[in-house]
View (cartoon, rainbow, N blue to C red):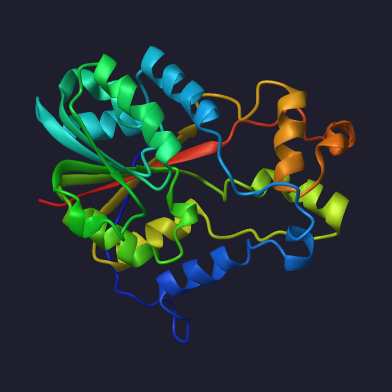
Length: 279
């Protein structure tokens, strides 16, 4: 079911801070305490280009879903897509048959290095813009549709991010995100290993509130994620070790805890597709 929300201004109920300020504050609560972070053998925040590439290959093999539908219906034949936080291209390359140009923005050179040859093999002209959004907005051309998939939970200044995204889209902005913070699934393990509670917000509903407060006629729909987060318990445990700042030799312990806490198999996440028109 599609739902629509109009803009109501930048403030919440009387006395509340602006909704984008609440987003920033809620996101900051996901920071890992310094005394835990200091013990991490590797960065708990990193992402693997190879893992992203697997998701892109799945999206290319089965090019369907609400987000692709909302992009495609606003994209003219031979049109352009701006993909912010493009990763390896899962949100945009499945539309190769309609794309005249893909403008891919990502802070990770490794991700763009995975995306570029895929685009070339599909015959999609691609322009890469290394860097973060909205820092790179002034160097980035306007496109017919602007897309940001699984990016916003990394964005503290959400209002500026969305405003620049809207300003770079001739027709439509399309966002895809999990209903809850993508690290929410780890909450029982954080409590088990570190005695640390984790926040419940922000959520996709908070994103919708920020976009509405900016004056956009926001529509959204939710759906089950197309793939499980992890294919095996071992894969879950290896990822959780890194996210929890634990050493790799504790993988077995993490796997056992996940089973004992009823975390395996993980339920499919809910994903939200959120969009608004710009013209």
